[in-house]
Length: 358
Image 1 (tube, rainbow, N blue to C red):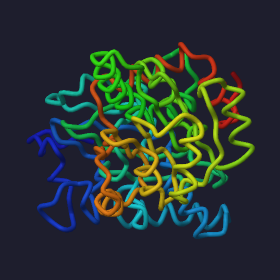
Image 2: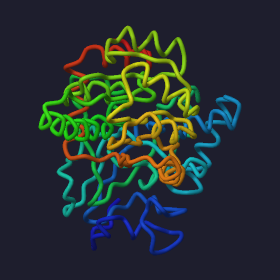
Image 3: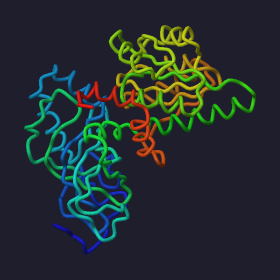
């Protein structure tokens, strides 16, 4: 099932059907032909993981009806040759087994490797062959059969044997968040140390979620003097307080800028670093308002409006650095998996959310 006479574009341009000339992520439609070029890898799909913003949008748009959600996902994959939600612009990632490796692939994978892709489904050629019949439509993780194609510039990680697959998938789906949080907080901590000042205050919005909980742990390791976990409800607060991951837990609507900033200030803010891990739109201005002058806001949510963030900072005369968490930091997979292994509270929180057996 190979087409090894030639290599493809390392970034996948040869897989773009419409419109020509754009990169796969920006394309409306990709070619998911299972025949690989000499530098490609074909993966037998076992499980898809939709990103939180995409699943929430699909769930809300279809009133939580599992059959309609399933049909919507199938329609997207069938029409686009990839899982690229046209409303949120986001996708997710997948787990599968390597079926074939082109002789010129630089990814270091071997046939039979069980891997998680660390690139978005929005740029991954994908075909689903089982109608997603094993998926109940009630969660982000989707048992599936089909195939996916990785390019020379793709990224994948061999799944660790010591962690359950659903847990690994959930962690690797957001592994860029703790790695970049660690980098940013470390820089602020070093600047504070040079002034003989206390370490940075770090606020995490959506702190009881997957990326939020990992970011809290990463911030603590990187030298934060105080971590503030912001959650939207009593239930989320109880979950986060039981984990002990945040020094202080506050309940606030991240879409209400004034209330959010006040809640963070009462908890010890304003924050030197604010990490946005919520999966709903409208949190940009609150994150900026809750951040101290000279601080940094890191946006990890695919629900973020970056024009709203930039114009909001301008309108507030806020001297803050705005960062887009692009999902990739060297060593990000190892960083996230290491946190799960080393911090039992994170594993417990993920287990509770995924309803996994420990």
